[in-house]
Amino acid sequence: MRVLLFLLLSLFMLSAFSADNLLRWHDAQHYTVQASTPLKAKRAWKLCALYPSLKDSYWLSLNYGMQEAARRYGVDLKVLEAGGYSQLATQQAQIDQCKQWGAEAILLGSSTTSFPDLQKQVANLPVIELVNAIDAPQVKSRVGVPWFQMGYQPGRYLVQWAHGKPLNVLLMPGPDNAGGSKEMVEGFRAAIAGSPVRIVDIALGDNDIEIQRNLLQEMLERHPEIDVVAGTAIAAEAAMGEGRNLKTPLTVVSFYLSHQVYRGLKRGRVIMAASDQMVWQGELAVEQAIRQLQGQSVSDNVSPPILVLTPKNADREHIRRSLSPGGFRPVYFYQHTSAAKK
Image (tube, rainbow, N blue to C red; front, top):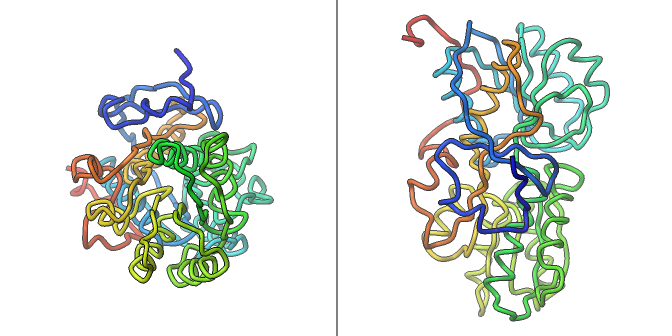
């Protein structure tokens, strides 16, 4: 199969892939297209998923995809959240809870960039790495787009959108040393290299709306020349609100999609958002766990295609595998019954 280079932004646009094609990532910059294959669960496997938190609609949408897949395939799903990033001890304790419940596979959305003693703790349990990479040798499969790409694609779009005009950008990539922040910054830097787009500062902080709003206000006071905010969906939400108080509204770019960012796109207050299709990722994580438990082959790193969303193409059809439905509440436990499978 032909390796596709990440520099070709057009290949990530909405029409580039058939409905169910996946991307198999060889590294942060290269992938091959992989066709989806049918799956049937041989029995009601017990899957335990760990998330950093459900404060962010990114993980809420992923949760929706997981419970939909659990229902579709007739498996049991238990979900635990750590309450934020950098919560290693909490997640280590939660793995013990998963084992006590009888989990047969762990779907690990890590709150840290490393997970010491994971092999010792999980023993022979399969681990599917979910979204955030921890580079643990015992993890045989990861579901998620390289975070480098989630910074690169918005940066590339911003360079094209600017048409050679100088821009002063504040980067707000999320928490320090967690959640792909470092990789998103690296991707953004690579995308704007050689252009008049300039990074004024980088503001790191947890994905909490009050924290992000305070960071933004502090940075605007320190750097009044800022005209673009690029960062997480929570940062984009803060920037949309803050922009109303400025004589010249901020240009807002989001590294990923949320319900608020989607509304911002529809209203023209966000010029671009990348989407790694979180609902689909949740479904895919469950599928990868089932395949691994059944001794079937699994790709080492697979994801849905990245969507480049703008006010012109952000409609419900294009985001249906990205966001949970309005009114959806987190599902912490789904138990298969014979009736549910019929």
